[in-house]
Amino acid sequence: MSKGPYIAAGVAAAGAALAVFVILPAETGYDPTGVGAALGLTEIAEPTNLELERGMARMEQQEVLALSDTALPASDGITDVWEYELLPFESVEFKYTMPEGQPMTFHWQGSGTLAYDMHAHPFDGGEEVTESYGVDEAQEMHGRYTPAFTGIHGWFWENRSMDNVTLRLEASGPMSAATVFTASGEIDRPLEGAAEGPEGSVAGHAMQSGETD
Image 1: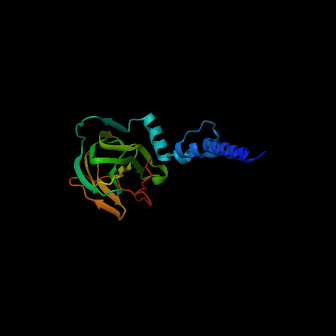
Image 2 (image 1 turned 30 degrees about the vertical axis):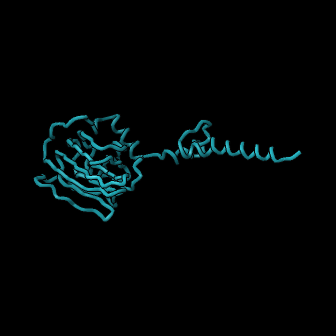
């Protein structure tokens, strides 16, 4: 009797097992047997975002970011408006220097959908203890943000479309300085009317990568 059918059946069974135990957990995060998690394959599909975990844990303890469907009253301090055009697959990061506990009201909007990561770096601890408070895609966002610590606070945006997207940010609050991070480097941006604020830096900080989710 020919062994061909048995070999073909064995290959098919091996292929099915490979799909269940390896391919599905790694590519989709679906892990019906639990083997994918044991081998660390599910993190390939859904990599752990430590910054977001820290931010979510923080927000269980205190209100850091409160979103709204409509415009909110301005916060005490200065008012700032910033616009930037993102080319296809271009990224930009924008940070305000802010003191702990003093709220900022903001509204940002793109002419198209943008991937974003709203996060903050404390001067005391820096990138090692960065916290993210939202990682997603949107075209517009209204909110009030209350810093959990003194440092630099703001957003990373990425245009994942084939069209140029114009981004407009409006913010009010106790911001004392602003910094723009691009692929070309770091740019200090003066804030008209800003009072003297906290001084410090995040050692070695540069624009993050585009892996926001």
